[in-house]
Amino acid sequence: MARAFNFCAGPAILPLEVLQQAQAELVDYQGTGMSIMEMSHRGKHYDAVHNEAIANIRELLNLSDDYAVLLLQGGASLQFAMVPMNFLPAGATADYVNAGSWGSAAVKQARLIGNVNLAADCEKDIPTRVPDASELKLTAGAAYLHLTSNETISGAQWKTFPKAPAPLFCDMSSDILSRPVDASQFSLIYAGAQKNLGPSGVTLVIVRKDLAAKTPKTVPAMLRYQTHIEADSLYNTPPCFSVYILALTTRWLKQYGLEKMFRRNREKAQLLYALIDASGFYRGTAKKECRSDMNVTFRLPTVELEERFCSEAAKAGMSQLKGHRSVGGVRASIYNAFPVEGVQALVAFMKDFEARNG
Ligand SMILES: Cc1ncc(COP(=O)(O)O)c(C=O)c1O
Image (cartoon, rainbow, N blue to C red; front, side, top):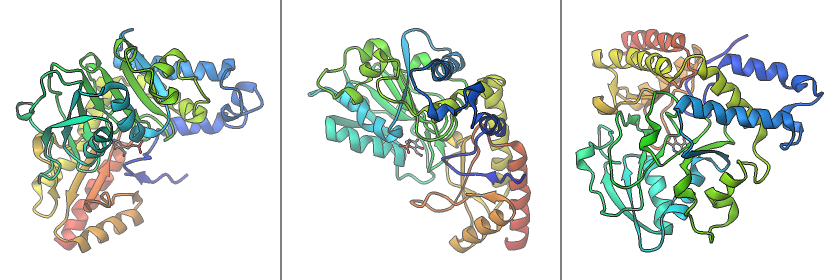
């Protein structure tokens, strides 16, 4: 069996054990004679999968009963709109940190709904970075402060989160469950699943129940967090197969725990950053203090060399290394499921490529 070292930023590599279990159970799920995709989402088999996914996330993040865990659809992109629709009332202001393309996308949607203050705006800074907590210009009485924990495109990541009097909301799409996080500092966390959690199609939302209970009833039912809290994320047909893979992926993750997974992720990233730092050929694009453990972004001396690098790497079994189309360069996305052997292979390839082209 040939599995590529798949560096895609998302949909990203999944644990092989998860794929193999899904394969084994695909046609006949637990003796039912049908797959999990073909049965009622209100039956006992799907119910067990749904509840396991939620329980695993609760356990991994050590969530108290103050939080609801929701499995929604529409990706993180729908959350860009749902968050202000639910939590940014007329006349109020929400603080947003814009440190990259995803923060900026969240700001654009929030501005359609209400007042937005840019607490910091470093989207265009080179090297790419997230701001220091001391730079934030916060609004007194803000409805919330919104951050993006890891800017997937620029490769900049918050290492510790700022404190603010307003409720802290965070788009964790590209580093959720990659490291231990004190979830109690957040009032709302959301993440599209397709990097660290499973396939696309399911979106994780963790929200404080007391805040969600206060959201306006004028928000349409599907877009209201309270609807999904009351229906235990079964208001309408859920993305059953995505939730099933989410349950398997979080079960896999529990064997490690977040502390161990974080150490593994950090070691993988350091292998690449050590080589980049020692090289005059490769240039990291993010500021050292905040460079991402998930998306390692770098440049080569010319665009032609970058293109050759990505195409030769692909031929050597290392695929999808091309940087995001909006910024170019090279991006190695090395989420939880990405094996250390793949990073070692990339390091060896990078040394060889430099020797031949440097
Ligand atoms: C940090 C971040 N936020 C939001 C999104 C958008 O997610 P989705 O495609 O699930 O809407 C992405 C996608 O890559 C992302 O990396």
